[in-house]
Length: 363
Image (tube, rainbow, N blue to C red):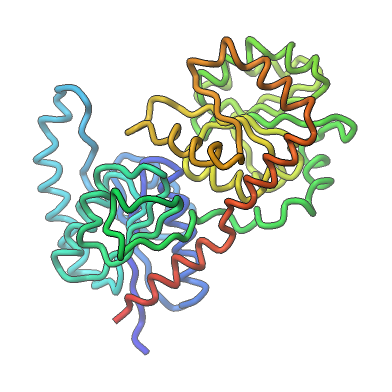
């Protein structure tokens, strides 16, 4: 059998990079001698994260369109032409069997070129509301792996496969790691733990909320493990002086902190939502309103509408946070209900299912 070759592209945020790496890892398990190449945007985080995961990456000179008239926007046509040309060269030199896009600026020109060269392409859409790039690419893609139902209004129905989002495999059995998690993070085993997740960079509004409501939260008897993000750590680290509070920039063992947590307050990026569904903890989603097409709100609403989470918008926090939080902490039936409904929406075999779709396309 000939040596298989795969090109993957996903970047800009961890939510696009992580699924691409998870898919590559699963393909590598199936085909240990396959060759892999990643393609990203030159100055974005994938240029560091992908080599850290052990894969080579080439960068394209590409960025998204800004919403107002800027120099960036005037450069866009030039960047697009350059990226299409370079994508064509990369594909012709590497000769991939399948090209896989998980979102982000670079995946647009790359998949566009793969389609024009008749190389099979797979799109993995993490969100409940797809971005413009994937909508355009979907017309020619061979398969579109999605994490939410009812995406026929955006994509050709016959190409959609409902797989779920790739998630870390170490999250599949967090129940068994509870004591290990409590010890690892030096938590008090007699108190319930509230976990705050602001994403890798942090979430300003969630941090402001916590700073304002921290005494109220602590008065309910819980301890707080607060991931404020690296942009905000200097501003909030002084809260570490309080009893029953730990403030960190980022968390290295997500499996163990999920195992130790009893309640979660989180942004609603696609990968966070998928992870939280897998671990099935009662969660309050506070979506970021500052992302394209407001997809975090749509992600959170898709779970909340099925009784799997509580959705609080940023503009509701001042009037609704305290009552919502108190009601959740006090109501064990509600906690169990939310956890159970959330877990029912999790897709533990997503990565394997996506790889099955990729294998079908190998000529």
